[in-house]
Length: 297
Ligand SMILES: [Zn+2]
Image (cartoon, rainbow, N blue to C red; front, side, top):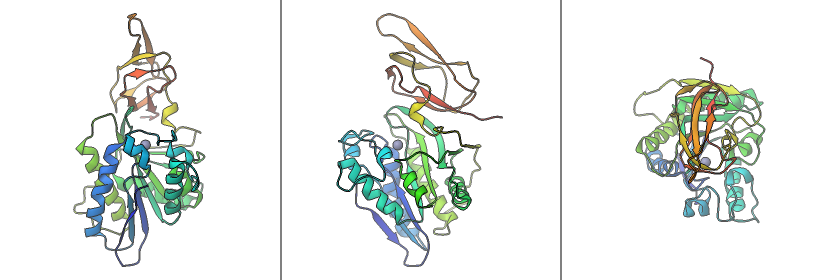
C-alpha cells in the first residue's frame, strides 16, 4: 500500500479516509485521489483527511484487478499482516479504516465494464450510520444512489460496517481509456462530502439531485460480477447503451461465435436501467455481460 497522505487542519473535526487503487485497472480514481491531496491541503478548515491513492500496490503496478498473488483486495479484507502481498495491503488499509470516522472508496468498471455513475453503500442495520451514508452519497453528486444488503464480507466497506463507520463507494466508467469527466466528478464528489461534513467550503454550489435512489436489501444485489452470465463463449456485441431503460426479455446483445457465423442472442433478465455493460468483447461462458438496476418509474 502507498503511504497515506494525512492533511490535518489543526482544528478539531472529523477524520475522513479517501482511498483508490483497491483494483489496479481502475485509473481515474487514482488520479482524482492524487489531485485531492493538493486541493485538500489548501482548503481544509477542520478535521483530518487521509488519502491513499494506491491501496493494492502490485495490482496497480500490473494494471490488473488482482494483486500479484492473484487475490482481489475487495474480497480479502480485513487481510493478514503476515500474509501475501494483497492480504498485507488489505491489513494495512483495514487498520487505517478503523482509525477513521468516514470512508470513501473510489472504483470504476476496470477493463471489463463501463458503469453508469453511482454512489453506493451497505444498508447498515444501525439507522444513524445508514442516514450518514445516505447523506454522503447525496453529497457526492452522482446520478444514482444505490443501497444494497449489508452482509457481504471481505470489502473495505465490510471493515467500516463492523466498526459502525459510515462508508460509501463510487463507480463511474471503466474500459481501457481514461476520461477527464470521471476524474473531475470524483474530485468534486469528495469535496462535496467534505463540504457536507463542514470540513471544507465548496467553491460553488453546484449540487445536483440524484436521478434515482434505489435501496434493495435482496442478498448479493451489489455483486456486479455475478450478474447476467454469458450463455456462450465468443464476442459480445451489445445492443443497449448505458443509462437506457429496458424491459425484461428485450434484446441485450449477442455472442458471436468466431469462425462459424453462429450467434447466441441475450435478453434482459429484469426490467430497469442499464447500470453497467461489458466493454471487453471477448467472453467465456458465465462471464458477466452487464447488469440492470431495477427502477420502477
Ligand atoms: Zn473496483
